[in-house]
Amino acid sequence: MTDLQQYGPSAIDLAGSQYTVEQTGRDKNFRPEYEARDVTGDTLFRTTYQMYEGKDEFPFVDADGSEICRVKAIDTWDIAGEYLLTDSRTDEELVILDNNLSLLQDTWRLRDAEDESLLAEIRSRGAVITLARKFLPVGQGIAHKYEIIDAEGNSVGSIEGEFALFDFDQYEINLADMSSVPTEPVVIAAIVIDAIQGN
Image (cartoon, rainbow, N blue to C red):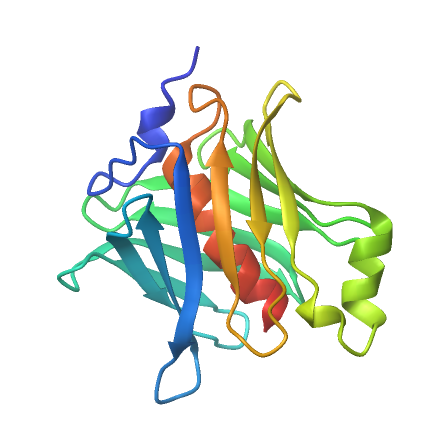
């Protein structure tokens, strides 16, 4: 079995099975700000979605403001593209996050940055909800819900949002099997996916 800890940034060690990620506001340049918390409510890390033309970045920092990892666009076109997770302390490339563009279902894949083998998938719920979010006047307020799938095709957890028409998005991440998917990249991916799809 692959040692999944190798895919987590060296400054993060997530041992729990439940996490919350939330868009907490916007900075002075109106860029979305996010944070991840554990089950006790303690902040694990924060990021600001830095939107540039074809060069989107997410610098993740700890509670003291020190950068621990970075997600940067490799290639983007609308919400489809590839994003590379790199450990800021070691400069090691860890995970590629990519999205196959589809009107019916959003499927994001987490792959090994070196050999591109599949580590996990994060799939949106069915086509009706996906279409409603895209085309109804209040569609963006309909909460996202994702299923976390391991490399063997087994459902091992979920990422569930709440109706957020006027408030910022918030998601609860629940992992039923922490041994089959890399926890840190999944929590980081939840933030990246919400930011990319919402902006």
